[in-house]
Each structure stands twice: as structure tokens, then as C-alpha cells.
Length: 293
Ligand SMILES: [Zn+2]
Image (tube, rainbow, N blue to C red; front, side):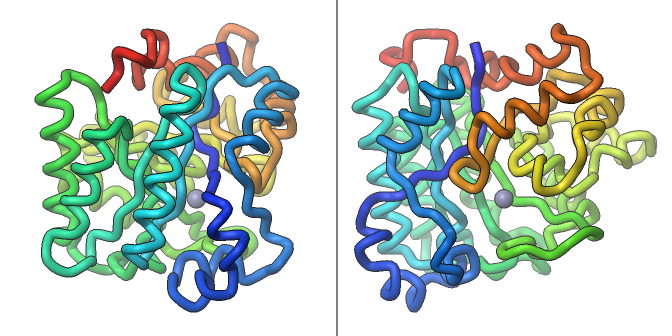
């Protein structure tokens, strides 16, 4: 069983109205200003999964800023997951800074229709990177309520930024110090900090940091663009294999390339398999998807 814990698919509307979306949504503009940045649909992901022998994929949009585009994207993810319930697992995207209670209402709507978490959120383009994070109180509460009602985890997936290294579209400044503050403010929420949390795991050796990250997992999304294959053994030694989720960031990177990058690591097969499968356990993918909502 191989679970890809973060892929991105968008409805054809985004291909057909690319210029309009660039003008309306700051996150879309940041990530897709380059005409070579690919926008793909579920069909493309399913073909890639077949090729790479990935069994299940978490499907997400991005941290949209435009409510209408976010709803289109969320509806598409929910629809794809209902067509392929044993294969695709949807997240939903909201902007905590939408006026009134639009963000918690949209999150609640999507979770009621089968979304299994909120994300990927992009704090920089969404405009909350520097806040004390109280703007997230309501959506975090929606995620916790889901757990209470269903006894299943609703993850909040947050794009993370490395303070070092090369720049890339969407990199942002959600660096380990900020991620730590976010986790500390919402200790009862379960987070996935993407891209190895921008290096946050290294600080788990600090006794004051470790408890704040008790409910935080890290995904490997885009790892081949950021690190060499030694990163897996390094992070695994810091946080253990149960808190690292294999993720490709498809279509940015093919699932095949992401898998090869992990397989080139020093980790034993046993430990690689844990990273490939653990997200399945925590999302309850192992059970029939029909019983999941
Ligand atoms: Zn990301």
C-alpha cells in the first residue's frame, strides 16, 4: 500500500480561465504565473497513480484567496473523491481572512461532504503569515469538532518554507519559527507541515519545542526539488517514521520521481514502508471509503 499524502488537481475551469484566475487569486497568481506550471485533473492523476503503483492519493487545491475559485476547487475535489471513493481522498481549501464566517462555513460544508482535512494553506499569499494566528481560531475549531463528532482526524495541512536554499514560486516565509507558534497555539489540532516543515524537525531536540509538536506530522512533498535523499533518514531519526508522510506534490513532481527519491535513501525497506503507509492509517484509508464520511 502506497499513500501519496499531497497531490494537487484542479477543475478544467482553471485551465480554461487561467488569465481570469491569475487576476483574481493571489495564490494562483504566485504559483501559476509561469505558463509552464501545469494544471491537471483527476484523469491525469489516476494515470500517474497507475504508472507509479500508488494506491491512494490525497487531493488538494491550494490556499486560495478568492472565495468563488476556492468553492469551485473544493467542489471539484469532493466530486472526484465521490467518483473514486477508494482511491482519492479530498481536502478543502479556505482563507481564514475571508470576511464574516465564510472560512469556517466553507470548511464545515466540505467536511460534511467528505473532505478529510483543510489545506494546503498558504499563509503568505493568504495574508496571515505574520498574525498571532487568532484569525485561524474558527477553522481550527471546525476541524476539532469534526474529530469530536466522528472520532477521525481532520488534518490541517500548511505549506512550509525553508529559511535557506533557493527561491521558488510560492516558497513564502512560513518558516519553522512561525510554524512552531502555530502548532503551539492550537495544541489540540492535528497538523501536517508540508515539505518537512521547512526544517522544523531539527528543533525537536529542544525540550521546549518537542511537546508543542506532539500532534504535528511532516510530509515529503517536493523533496526531490529541495533536498538529496539523505533527508529521509535524517528526519526519521528526529521525529520517527510515524510522523513522516510520503507526498509527491504532483503534478509539480511525478509520483514516480518522488518514490525513487525515497527509495534512494539509506532507510531500510521496513522504514520506507512506514513512511509510504502511515498516512493511510491516520486518515483511516484502510477502511472502506464508503464508510468514511
Ligand atoms: Zn507547499
